[in-house]
Image (tube, rainbow, N blue to C red; front, side):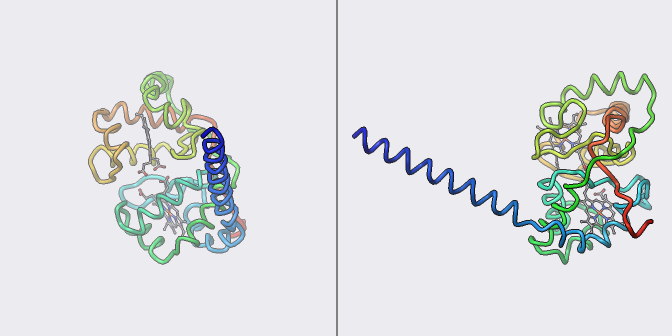
Length: 212
Ligand code: HEC
Ligand code: HEC
C-alpha cells in the first residue's frame, strides 16, 4: 500500500517535471531574432516615442519591456476581433501563433527606458490612494511583478486614460478590468493614469535603427 502511494507520488512528480520541462521548452522556442524581423512594421508606431493614435488622440502604447504573456493575449484579442482597433486588428490578422510568440519575445526582452510623466502633486496623492485597489494584480507602482498582468509603470498617461475609459464604457471588454473600471470617476481615472505613468519606467519605446 505504502509502496503504491510512493509509486504514485513518484509518477506524479515525473509528470509535473515533464510538464514544466515541456512548457519551458515552449518558452525557449520563441525566437526573438525572428521576432525582430517581423516587428519592423510594428516599430514604425511602437518604436518611436510619443507617436499618437489619430482619433481619439492618445499616445501609441509602449510595448517594449511588456510581459510576453500579455503581448500574446493582446495580439490574439485583436486577431479574433474581441479587442477593437481597426489598425491593430489588421496588423494582427496575418500573424500565426508562432509569429506572435516570436514578436512577443522580442519586445518583452527590451529594458524599460520610459521617462516618468510630469504630473501634479494633487493628482499623485489621489492616484496613489486609488492605486491600492490595483496593487494585487499590477503591483503598487504598476511594475508588473506578476506576468499575467500588464505592466503599467511608465506607460503613457494618455494611453492609460484611454484604456480605463474604454473598459468603463464597454468599448474594451475584459472580465476583470470591466469590473475594476466600472465605478471609477473621470477624476479617478486621470489620477490613476497620472500615478502609474509617473512611476519608474518598466516599459520602453525603443528608438531603433529605422529611426537613427
Ligand atoms: C499604425 C500604427 C501601429 C502599427 C503599425 C502597429 N501598432 Fe500596435 N498599437 C497601435 C495602437 C494605436 C494601439 C492601441 C490600440 C488600442 O487602443 O487598443 C496598439 C496596441 C498594441 C498592443 C496592445 C498594447 C497594450 O498595452 O495593450 C500590442 C501588443 C501591439 N499594438 C503590438 C503591435 C505589433 C506586434 C505590431 C506589428 C505587427 C503593431 N502593434 C503595429 C498602433 C500600431
Ligand atoms: C484582479 C486583477 C486586476 C486588478 C485588481 C486590476 N487589474 Fe488592471 N488589468 C488586469 C488584467 C488581467 C488586464 C488585461 C486585460 C485585457 O487583456 O484587456 C488589465 C489591464 C489593465 C489596463 C490596460 C493596460 C494596457 O496596456 O492596455 C489598465 C490601464 C489597467 N489594467 C489599470 C488598472 C487599474 C487602474 C486598476 C485599479 C483601479 C486595475 N487595473 C486593477 C487585472 C487587474
